[in-house]
Amino acid sequence: MKSAIYPGTFDPITNGHIDIVERSLKIFDRVTILVAEHYNKNTLFTPKERKELIEIATKDIENINVDTFEGLIAEYIKTHKTDAVIRGMRALSDFEYEFQMGMMNRRLSPGIEIIYLFPDEKYIFLSSSILKEIAYFDGDISEFVPEEVAIRLKKRLKRVKINNR
Image 1: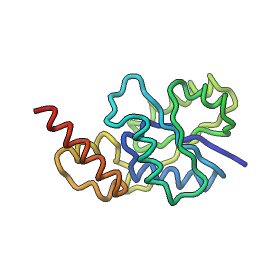
Image 2: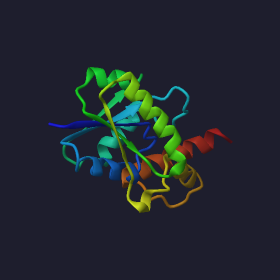
Image 3: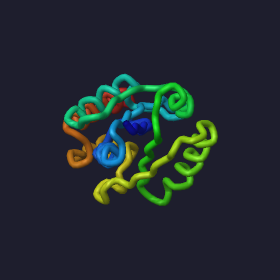
């Protein structure tokens, strides 16, 4: 059974992320979506909340697991049997960062394969950061995230607005 991990911040998960998961399952028997804590990112949702949103958003997709992890991806790979790391690639601007991270993970975890997948073209421009900005200003995000994610994101951003006044 071939398995892969798909690590990311997922703050929050988008339809672009889900598209990458579905593409990954065409290659691998099992995919673990790994909610990573990033030490220098201020996230809107806690790791536990992000995991819950991913579980809700992917409830109809078989052969996935959702896990959280704080630390180096290479350490997760060493303690969990996995064949590859999936990374989403949206645009040329992603390439340098993804390439550096992929090569470092390969150095820290020799033998691991790094697979880069592009989302459907309708999501190629989509990022969680852009999504949050649209939602913050009450824009329509319904085509970019599952319904429950949109509801919770707007609710969270409403609190942020109130606290920033």
